[in-house]
Structures are given as structure tokens and as C-alpha cells.
Length: 515
Image (cartoon, rainbow, N blue to C red; front, side, top):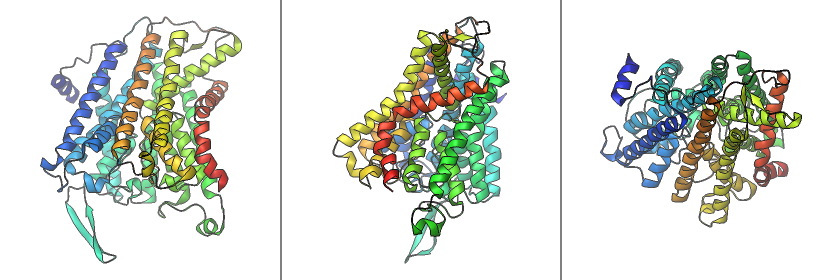
């Protein structure tokens, strides 16, 4: 009944099927209106109730933040507790946490329909997918998660700014907020960001070691669970399990490597602390922080419970590589699944070339047209990252924002554009990104990195849906078997990993080998 009211209010008929151009127009139109609304809300903050006395956000930062939350990136170049009032946080940022995640799920479902359907160009209805993803999945999970977080000590109120005790001769200022509810959807929707600048390292957002593990579960649950959705929709749960195994293999491998780099003892300081404790919360320690950092960069979450710039050189490089792989293990809500399926299409194509057979995946031929869409998808994000990073390093002004010089300073800028274009949102916090250059260029990188790949995903979905199914023969590659899982893992690491190898060699690899 609630959904019917929503459809009536927005004038949408959920039973109307859309071809891929119409579906794409819905995605872009809804997102464009969302960017405009959130931008205006920030610019008018000084006139809104519950603003806590905060002034309007500057134009470049308002654009950056609007682009960030609408694209599910949640990159923040501001201090949350010193810039945003209750209305902007709840009516603006929290709302986008829901709907931006629902947009990703909708696009993923549209691609799966392309595999599941035949002899039709229809991919479903974007407005119905958006509403159902929000009402039936994200909202119920977030309500339960928020209750758990409040019960464990996260705050949930609308209090104003107040002083807390005495600190170094003066009082410390704190403001409250609807923190637990926003923390819940920020993790469930793989959004990131945070009410406070310390993000999920802040005790108001993440009070205990239990809530830390609970938040890791929340940011992983939907991306991993969508693999079963994929299997059910295409009529073979084993196909979903093969994708799940690929995601889990990469995730576990990255965690093992991060544990090794962060627990490695180099010198007496590390030996006394038991590992690389700089930038980590003593409540969580190295192990839990390593799991959180890998989980947040292999998804599009961007929430942090430790500061990635303080990781060892190789540890920071693993966080970078996790995003550069496309955040597909398990990835963001929806975006992880459709990114992994694009890589599966490429892996099938490679296998077809190796045996001299026309590649097929789930009964659909992977021809020239499909491969063009898949190739454009995997090339657009690296192009954005590397071009913007090169421009920032070549121009004189952006370099002034670097806190560090040398390899680590380069990694700060590379991380910023990698995070923005891949819609992650975490940062090497030594970089001062609150400048007109970084607010504008990272904002553009977020928008282009979100919506250009969606164009190719939906175009591929439309192309697949129009095909007639190809019968399975003795020569058909069994894509539900471990052999295909291994091929897919190798294709991901080789194709996307080597794309960034020169940049990684200049930054985290050089830093890690020098330490």
C-alpha cells in the first residue's frame, strides 16, 4: 500500500516495462534532480531550522558533497560535526544514502534481467525497482541495524552543540544528531561518510568492538547476498555461488595480505606496539582494523575505523588496489554485482578465444557488440583516475594540498581520485581536499565514474535481453565450476590490476619497498 501511494505521488506505473534507453533516462533524471536538491539544501542551510548555527556551504564544497552522496560515494571534504546541521544531515544526506544505494541495486537487477530474458528489450521498470529496493530491503535492514547500534551505545538525538569537560585549558564542543540511523544505512547501503570527521572510529558512531564487527557485517551483507539473487533470477543457484566464490576468494586473500603487512614488525616501535598501531583505535586493534579497511575498500563503502594514510606502505597500496579492481569483491550495493558480471563476460570471452569457440555466458552469445560495452566499462574508470591524477601532479596549485612529499604524497592524490571515480569515499586524510580544484575535479570524477559505467551496463543488458537463448552443448564452458572461478579471479587481477601498476609503483610500492 505504501508503494502504491509513492507511485501515485510520482506519477509512475510500476507495470510499465522499459527498454534500456528509457531505464537509463530514469536513472539519470532521478540522479540529476537529487544533485540539484541536495546542492540547494546545503546552500540554504543558514536559513533552515536545526542548522545548529552553521552557515551555508560554499558553492564548490556543496557541489562536491551533492555529487558525492548522490553517486553513493560519500566523500567528505568537510568536518561533519562542524559544517552540517540536522536538516541537511537527515533530509539531505541520509535520504541519499537510501536512494543512491537503491539505484545501484536497480541497475544490477536490470543487467541480470538481460541475462534471464530473451527475445525482448524490456528490462523492467526503474521506478518500481527504486521503490522496492528502498522500501523492502534497505529500510527494514536499516531500522533493525539502528536499534542494535543504539542498544550498544551509538547516539540518536537532535541535541544542539554543548561543551564537554575541560581539555587542555578549554572545553571541547560536541553536537548530537541522528547518528545511529545514519550509521546503519551508511553501512547497509555501502555509502560511507559519517556524522563525525573521525567516521566509524568515533565512539558515538562505533562504540564497541562488537559494533565494529557488526558494521563490517552490514557493509558486506547485501553485496554478498545479491549473488544468490542473481542465481535465482537466471534459474541456477550454482551460477550465483560461482560469483560468490570469486568475491570471497579475493576478499579473503586481501585480508590475509593486509594482516601480514600490518602485523609485520619493522623496528622496536612496531615490536612494542605489537604492529602498526599508528592511526588505529585501541578499542579495535590491528586485526579488526585490517578487516574493516579491506572490506570498506573492496566495497564502495568508504567508511573507516582507522586512518588509511597511517597504514604501512604496502597496506595502503592494498586499499588502493581494492578500489582499483572495481570494488567487486563483493563491491557496493548493486554496483559490485554488475561490475563482477562485466568481468565474467570478459573472462568468458578470453576462454572462448583460448579454445577457438564463440563465447557464451548463461545461454547468451558474447559477440562484438557485447564486448565493446564491456571494454568501455572497464576502461572508463581507470582513464578518469589516471588523467585527473596526472593533471593534479602536473599543475602547481594542487600539490600544495599534499601533507607529505615523495611516494606517500603521490599516493594521497592517487587515492583521492581512485576513491572518487570508483565511488568509494575513503581517503588518505593527509591530503587537504577542501579546495576549489579538488572539490570540483573529484566531484566530476564521482559523477562520471558513477553514471558512465551505468550507460554501458544498461546497454549491455538491453543487447543480451534481445538475444534468443543458445542451447548448452558439450563445448559450452561450465561457468558454475571452480575452473571458471579461478579464470575469473585471474582475469580480474591481470586486466584491472596491471592497468594501475605503473601508478602503484610510483606510490605505495615505492614507499613499501623503501621502509
